[in-house]
Image (cartoon, rainbow, N blue to C red):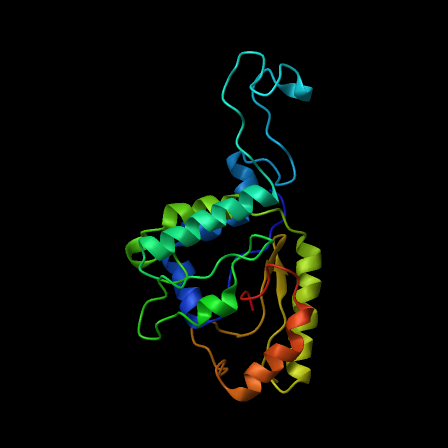
Length: 214
């Protein structure tokens, strides 16, 4: 299995969303086990190895599906449009140019009385297929770099007054984000001015795509 960052946030609703839809987490943590190629590789249709046979291959077959950052962005846009049209979230934000979702803007749309539908494809998972498709196209990450980034972020959060902010850990080649020691029963007030101030001060410690994970 290739090394990936486990998709786990520490906000209670986001954790509940991932627990309710474990298949989504599995699709990222093990995306290389389902036969998908690495994100930076370009799939080749039969008979088209090394670029021979022109665009459609020597037998004029269908063009291979696009891969890489562009495909990831396009898939995320498809998910976003679904969330606007089918999930009723007309202000659901565009993904960033990197293709990663803008969690700070999504957080602002969350209904505190809801069940985290904003994180898991809308009510009844109406956009779950689009979400799974986008997650399967996420560029492969370096677990060691992700761990070091989240460790630096955790230390920064503690230095800025959030003393209970826990370090991330490594398990089985995957990164388990820090933050709450027990995400299902959060002890930190993420909405407090002090927490928000620390979060802002430490935002640059997290690599692209890690915001919202701890």
